[in-house]
Amino acid sequence: MTIVSLDDQLKLAQIRKARVETKKMACDIANAPRQLRIGIASEWLKIIAGVVVGIIGSVAVYSEFRAGKLVVENIKREAREAEALRDRANAEAGRARKERDQAFRDRDRAIKEGATVSKELKQKLTYTTAELGKVAPQLVQSRLTYIQFRGALPRDLINDLRANLGKDHFDAPGAERVAKDYSSHIKYFSPSDQPDAERLKQSVVAFFNAKGCPLLKLPTILPKDAPDKPLPLEVWISHSCIPVD
Image (cartoon, rainbow, N blue to C red; front, side):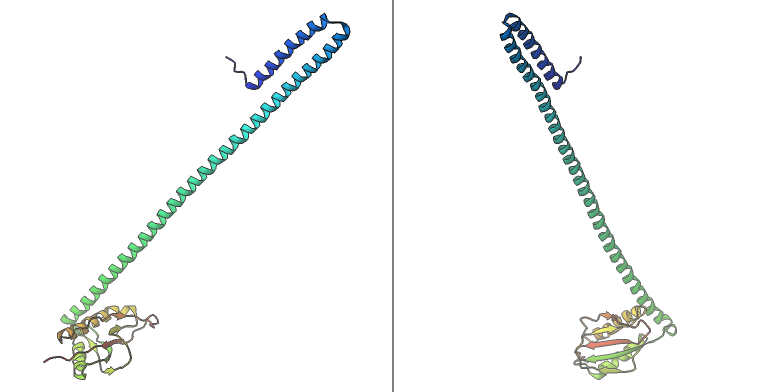
């Protein structure tokens, strides 16, 4: 079965109408006087011309309809393509956000794991040095240590502290009372001295605990502008302790 387009159907209808009108005109002319036939022929020529113009106009209208329909289809296609691009962009953005969040989680986990390993290593180094001092004290070199203090701390108490530190292999030849504003802390100047600083901290804390006046806080501090070379350790004590004998 042959499918006839709307355009062809319009043309065929117009042609058939023109044929019918032409036959009718021929009959009218044949039956009319000569003058009248001329007038009739003129009128029918106008009619035929109108039919032809109508056909052309129909074709033009149909062509404009097809062109308009094509424009609409192009606009719809472009809209679909734009929506597809938008969806792909949103999907890519979503994947990028997930990758970014995963990277942050991996970074935080690495930092946490690194801090845990570092803490465990420092504890092991401190413990190993202390144990070595017990079984082979000649193998542990005493660290030169300076003591600065303020508050209600008798000189005899500070001398006892110096002697106690000597048992833990810290050589504190003297102690200075410093009145400026500071809080208790242990200061060291090279990352490699951190285990000794921790060991010094434990010794000082244990001393004041034994005297019945524990230190609430005694952090170990590595200054930002530290020269990163072997230097004496420093003990800074801001405290009040009157031992009860």
